[in-house]
Image (cartoon, rainbow, N blue to C red):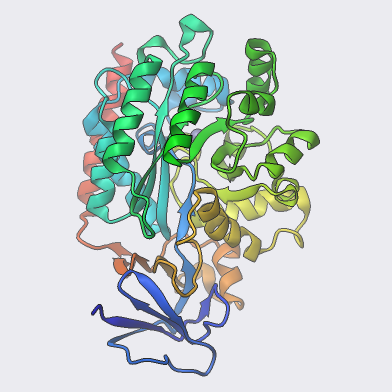
Length: 451
Ligand code: ZN
């Protein structure tokens, strides 16, 4: 029998009827302890959470781990999406498997330290020497014990066929579909508490053929998988769709068989009222990526209108070349602030922002076992202490995390196991990780420079 741990009397907790804490057994939450009460059954261990603000583990729904190697890259500074991408594609062509290993490890570690317990990644660069990128990501996630939804991204529409990316990073459709099937059969877990899941993610309308969108949707349907892509991020993309396909983005989404509740879209900014209504009716998920949207000046996602119509909102940090960090708690703060600018302070509360990054994010990944502190859910938790200068003098502990700008979790638990203690990842040499990662970043920078 697994031992029971009582996370006792937290300073604050984002859960109903759990003022005196929660009890964990194995990988699950087995009891909520109300105010003034003790756990109903015997427990083996106590963790005194008197100084901790306890959140459900934060869930990141959009990222490109490899981009941690091209943060603040001089070729990409001060540009909007299309010119930014065109500058960086030339660099990303030189990615190799060692780079994928170290960038995945660094991004996941950074996310973990910011209170993230489940991370999705959208990897779509598969040059000749990068066939096994997803296999490497699975290996790293397992090494760290993080819960992941890895998407098999793809690009099949190169410059020769009117797309944006160079030919060297696009693959033919059949090769992409065969590899997608291989990855699903090898890694995708379907049980409650799954640690590794696969989704299919053709990159964007301007880098993928219509045929690949349609065939990916068919494979996803057969395997009950989620589908992911970038959509309606910029007006340039909308104009591209009108010119290339004679359709607006949502018409295109419907045309290729993606307008349903297993689809989640990164950004989802430029929708009109009628499109929002259709996306809502289909219960499509939207990964809101506030920092990236501000960095590339893409626009502001219409979160409340989308939610009102039935769409689901989650949060994503987006790739580390357009953020340029992978910090989930900071991203929740950004979402709250950017959305306040659109809707006003009283409509976008700190609770609302937390809800997007937990319950909302879980829902868009079609997971009902994470994203909430409740009996029967997986024990994925992020504990923060208010022991830095920035918190001194604060009163409401939950609001303080966002308003004072928390950046670092004190403890993180995934599936009932502590992964971070006293702000440090267990069994991890951070200095070594940074040395190895920055060496790979330099290698990539130099390779691109010499070509
Ligand atoms: Zn992205």
